[in-house]
Image 1 (spheres, rainbow, N blue to C red):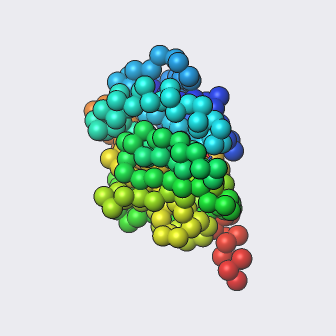
Image 2: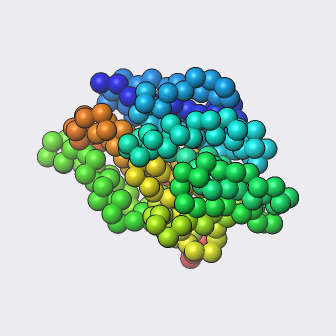
Length: 264
Ligand code: GLN
């Protein structure tokens, strides 16, 4: 069994170590004996979404987002069709913003998005920067628990954390349309816009988020959900054996501990 991961615009959407998400996904496949191929695709290069099991878009500065939107626009139809057919997509910050209607920059320039999801982004004067802790929607926690083989079949039980932790640095404020679910609720930090306490978006198997870090090494439960969804879509309905995630979980809990100390 093999998963094919497409890393889109790795030379443009490459902020804050987001390529670490690809490294984490590939490692978690290899540790489980799942073959994985990572294909990098940038401006003008061949891309057939029907060959993809998972697509990743990292964060990018306003300039890079502007550079790639015309190229991505040519691929919008194929991406939209694949998303409706259950393609797993992880889009971080700038990559997340691009999936919406538009990004209105601070200088008044409107970067058109792909319009695949019903949300828009408007840049604010102050950048939203800092560590983020967000609580997963309970529905996602149950979904994550179902990813793993039950305790009696494995040496260690699944460690499904109920939070996501990461780092944010964005000028954009994203506002979700009424039909869209957030990925999580903000406990600490700004999230989508610093106003509605929402973080990210979940639509079918599309996960958008403002969390850099990179995100997945400190949130192994989310990484495994993405892999499980991609495998299920290929008809591989087995449950993943939990990995020894002590280091990953310690990194996650270190952020939680730092925040609870700050709160006093
Ligand atoms: N340029 C976008 C913003 O500032 C996205 C930044 C990012 O990807 N970290 O909101």
